[in-house]
Amino acid sequence: MRRILGFLKTYLVVSLIFGMVDLADNILTFLKFNDSWYAVAISIFFFLFFFFNILSLIIFRYHRVPRIAYVLPFYYLVSYVLFILIALSLTLLTVLPPWLVPATVVLGVITSLFEMGFSIYLLQKIDFAPAL
View 1 (cartoon, rainbow, N blue to C red):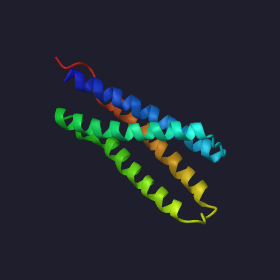
View 2: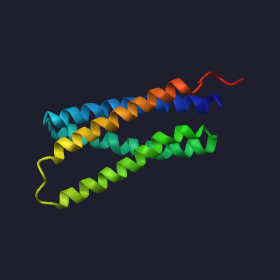
View 3: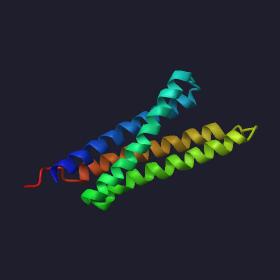
View 4: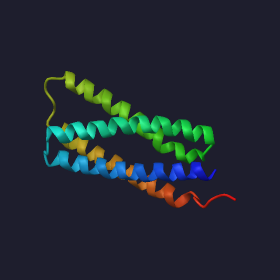
């Protein structure tokens, strides 16, 4: 039980860091920062985090962690797939509405704050003291 709680705590800290990176990414998008190396690095980071969430769900299920711990991995997987589908559909459009980028940034900031807030909430709520 101690090892799974250690993994859960690590997952929540990584999720908190991911939320911070996502928030910074949204702010940089708003400031129109568009370096190609940065875009590749952040895309790889998001892609790896997607698979980390799949692995986390498997581990959580196997070790029967509290159900509330499933919220973030499911949220990340669903939001990642939805954002990819939206991005692909918008790529097919040749004209993007002028409100799209600011709306996307606002949505990204809101989701980043949710990710960070929920990670902090779970870090405080779950008792990580080793079970004897």
